[in-house]
Amino acid sequence: MREDRKKIEFLTEFIDAVEVKGTAIGSRETPFFTEMLSYMNQEDEPSIIVPYIKGNIKINGFMYEEEANTLSLYVVDYDIDFDEENLPEISKTAITELANKAKRFYTNSNGIYFNSSEGLEFRELAKLINENRNAIEEVDIYVLTSKFYLTNKPVEVSIPGVETVNIHVWDMDRVYRLSEAEQGMRDFDIEFEKKYGQAIEMMYVPKNSGSQSNYDFDCYIGFIPAKLLAELYDEWGPKLVERNVRSFLQARGGTNKGIRDTLKDPVQREMFVAYNNGISSVAKGGDIERIGDTNLYRISRITSWQIVNGGQTTASIHQAYKSGEDLDGVYIQAKLTIIKVAEDEQDRYLLEDDLVSKISEYANTQNKINKSDLLANTRFMSDIEKYSRSTWIPSQDNRKEESKWYFERARGQYMVDIGRRTKGKEQTVFKKVYPKDNVITKVELAKYFMSWEGYPHVSSKGGEEAFKQFMNLNAQYWKPLEDEDGVSSIKNIDGDYYKLLISRKIINSYVTDIVSQMGLKGYRANVIYYTVAMLAYLYGEQIDLMEIWNKQAVSDSWESTVRTIAQNTLSFLKDSAGDRNVTQWAKQVACWEEFKKESAATLSQLV
Image (cartoon, rainbow, N blue to C red; front, side, top):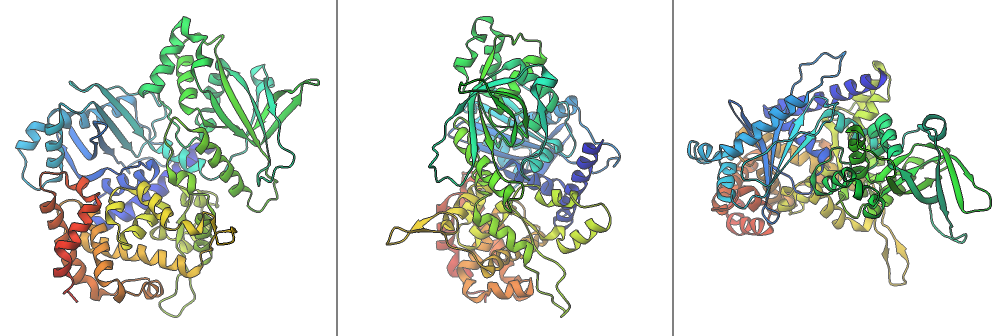
């Protein structure tokens, strides 16, 4: 199958990227974990630890939200041994066992804590569980696998004393679909009348003829039978919710459980349309005919239909359908926006993405959306992308330039770009111009920027928070500002701005390589962010970012300085945290301020 072949190629490129990073740090599961997090885009980033593996117990990372009394546990299944002719699949049984490995760390935390040595990262997690066992109300177990979980059946695990346990599966099929979804709206037709024997009737929403909007669209409101929606999802599957930036494909949690329970109750079932907020969708066009002289329109075919809000509703209804629930008489309120962008429009995909993102942002009021998903289509991000495609890396041996950096504005963009080229010469040429080592995502760019600018505590919070603050600090490049005369304008970035962004990435890589060689025990990411920040704070004026761009490297003369700062950073983080969780302490501005106060004077004498 062509789609399976595309998925295998995507997986191969994904694993190649992980292996390149794994070679640098002597690990495989950690870079895979990091790569997966770039797709998950959680608001707060978990602590990635040296994997704890003992018998049938395993853990790769954790995060504790004290205010919500929620503990997140992460377990990785990374396997590169697969037949390239067949999709490497994983069963529900295997997923359940992986989730149980993380569960057993929780249930055995007392013994793990008292039988392990001081300074080990997993011991901190065991201590956290022991001290908060009575307060923890919810445990979220994330299973991250390099295989494809195609059945997508919900996995259930219980933990004694914990009220709610959720299993979140992040497999390669989910990552593949997410990367595909961010590359623009796909063309496909759904024949409501011919295939499913019924058309949809909706009311047209009048438009102001004098509108100054940059967008051309038609909007319709109405309802869709629940059974039809379930049948559509059964055939088209995740393709219908690719553009839903908060797509949940398993009925879990309070909202989905409520939907499921309502559909099971014969009395409540007919009230579904009153209880549920419905779905919001977009499409490129279709066969839409007016019914007589009314404001009612009949939709018999639709092109590139996407549910941008209502993924939970859709998936829950589908599960009820597959479970044999009677859906007759159940209706879903629906909004349909037909996006009109000319096929020859130069920025067609940007215009489509921009409008879909805005609809997603304002329609998703119940579920939080990641800022990085919604701001990826700003002109600022697009300009960085354009510079990355047009700016050659300076040659170091007087030969012509041969490669560029690749800024990944949308997740998975690099692998999708490779997949669009013919296997063989075309892909080889592309990879020569854009080597895997030169790929940088928007959240990575943000973390490197924030660290160098003196916000290591923000970078420690993870890509989502770093990106949000990065966008705030650079608001003049994407948010209209009014001058004294009330005229709105947006500043343009130039080639130098782009080059200095990449220089910060080069500095971060330089520090990362040194820290990896040092073999420091624990809190690697925090040590890197704080080391970069202290280097900039103390010696920033002596480091020429444009020179780093021109040489594509940091002078080796800084190595001993970086080593000393890194060692001091790790000692400070551990000592200053006291009884606090080190990772959580590193996310506070007070940690950075105290680090400068206690260590800056000593570290300023290194050069």
